[in-house]
Image: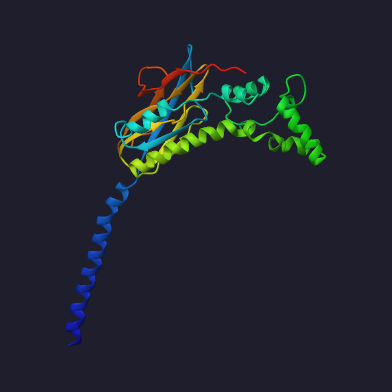
Length: 263
């Protein structure tokens, strides 16, 4: 009697084991297929005969085609744009501060490390000198005054331009996410103008910089339709965008002259 029970239990255990093994093997392919894909973005700009990568600029990936995002794109194109020069001139900033910001395409005073020549000597920025003097009086130390110099600048001179841009960006993102129900993704280009959107679901997207980028005497805004596919060669085939229609360029920016402004 005991022999009969044992001979019945062994095959049953093996069958259960095989069933579980098949189930696990059957689940493996679907997990590997769920991994997202990559979009390699390459941003180039041409000024005269020189071409370079557009560095330290943020781009956004919005779910949906250009047609689906038409209202959002139209709003971006119609939004009034205040250039860095116009904003700082309206704030009565000195030419030296404006030029200091221009040299590294800065949106705020935080984008560059202050050098001794910025606060001393014939090329010093007057606003920095004033903030330095206030800091010395407050901290009793020139070294501390230099380290905390930005805190003694008026807020609008410190980062007013940057904050104004952020408000425009946040408004567009909120509108885009309400329309699509999908989170807007963002990346910043490296010094060569390259950036990567990773872990993407295949589908159609709108690529945009939302707020125009200043380039010399013009502004550039990109709104491009991108079809993201499950493609293992994504790193080899960058999505190239420029301000000029050239070979392999997927999208050309809308380029407009910057407004002229005075004191």
